[in-house]
Length: 343
Image 1 (cartoon, rainbow, N blue to C red):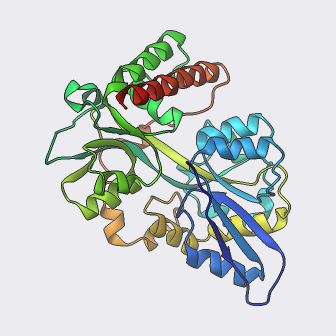
Image 2 (cartoon, rainbow, N blue to C red):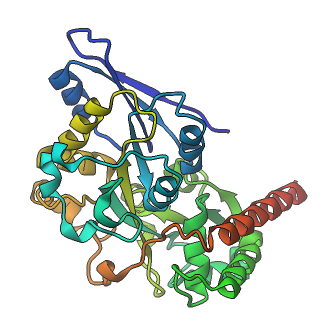
Image 3 (tube, rainbow, N blue to C red):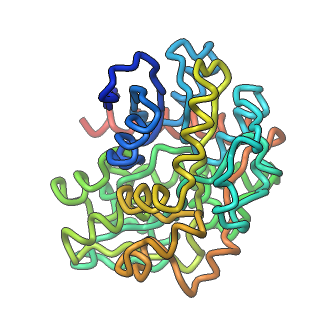
């Protein structure tokens, strides 16, 4: 069951103008939201989602909630821009765009950053309890000893990246046979899956004692800080890299305010605050020196020595998306049937 959480930050002068944001949980510093509200004399409404498909559906259905700002994965930037659901950005209004690291710009999911700007980045990999097991590669997840032990991720492309990498395939493959083999690989993983979620990962590990799971690096870091037995590792096949991006959706009611917010969060100081608050890495080059030495030295947040710049980012490909989506539906249906059989 999903739920929504609304965070209201009011300006002291009582303005009725409201900036509406739809993003992941704990993704924008409350201090940054408050400072923006005060600077521009506005209200800010921050609504949380747990599945980016919900974001796409709401915008596709007319953006009835009138969101002005979205923060979404790169795969959905590709998908939603092709569906004409995102506003083409006027970069003349974004003076702080110069602060961004060029290596995060002009990526395959949005050449020229026509629709999006990088906001935070990280990796998706394996988190496991080293007091119980040892994991070195994605292929280890299929070990029968892990029956009913794994927390899977509920994002389609994250799980397909793992399946493809475990088979030695490129995650950007357009080969239908390889995609079908990856689907079969996911189906073979079902006996080992205890739950599937990308919500509240620390709860699953720290309160429910999961042995292993697929986690974002920020969650992996948070769990390992609470219990040193948990290790967030980069498997030998290599982790997948993700970039979450900030965009203006079609149907935004306060586009000028949205541009002001985009520029505001791209300042070095605010980008650093958001990265530190969320526990993920910043693509803002000017912000990096402002990040604490502890976080910059943490390999879970800022990977080193693993060729991170060469790690692939999953992107939307109209040639293959239907294959992935049909395979994913089959996987979810089989997973649900498996759950019912266990009861």
